[in-house]
Length: 328
Image (tube, rainbow, N blue to C red; front, side):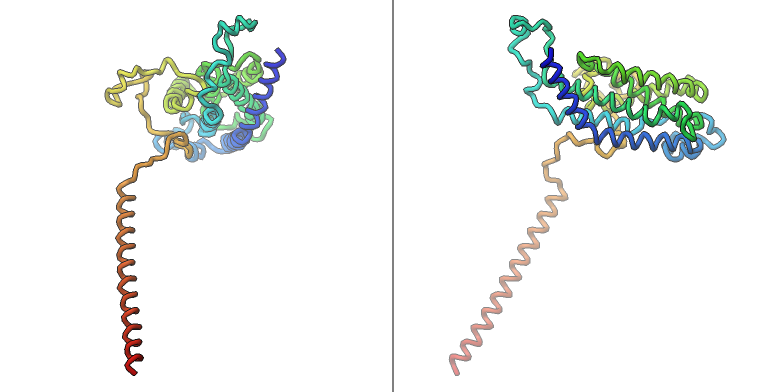
């Protein structure tokens, strides 16, 4: 009804304004990536964007190097998840009515009544998807169509593989990993079609510069990032049932408990400056802190003793002179 439309519109405007700084940062970094990928040689691109372990010799620079998903893509998705976590409270997970039967009795036809957390999550997912589609259309589409100089077709194999890696990861997160959908408005249809059109254009370049082994490596990178970031993505996209681990299996060894059969349960953290903003600050005093406090206390006691000794000497000196004056 009209009230639901008004509430949805308000949440959509709020989500758009909330994600504006993250969208601006994503736009800047995507623009820089496209510029560097199109204007750099394959050797220079690998030296700047690929890890030292994955670099190929100069004589084999025609083979693409598949790196991790771009940090600006992962950072944008994690920012959306952080925004959701900051904007909800436990009561937002409760139904707005005592029960669904009560809602039906009151005349609500649809028994699937959204909660407050669902409205906020749908708004963030919808605006996040629209922001990604807008940024890619603004910076990536002209390079793919060849209207920029240089164009994406002038990029090396690694740059094209990285673009395919990022595009397919965005699609996998919003349309495959997402268990909550986008609500009832259907506003995700336009951005979804835009991403599919960009992906098809990118696939033409991928078939020229990459092989089937490159696509398999891209899929492995997706699995790795999704499992490493599952702690943050679960609140936004929902729990990944295919990668869930029974609680009884958590007591085993770290390397012997695979999640998806390809990567282990525990991973080293991704390279990011905002990896642990949701974890509590350690309150226990460390050994170095206790030792520092002990040394500071000893210094205070030594200073107080020296002051007391000095003060006594001064008082004794004044007493001597006063006695001499009395005798005279």
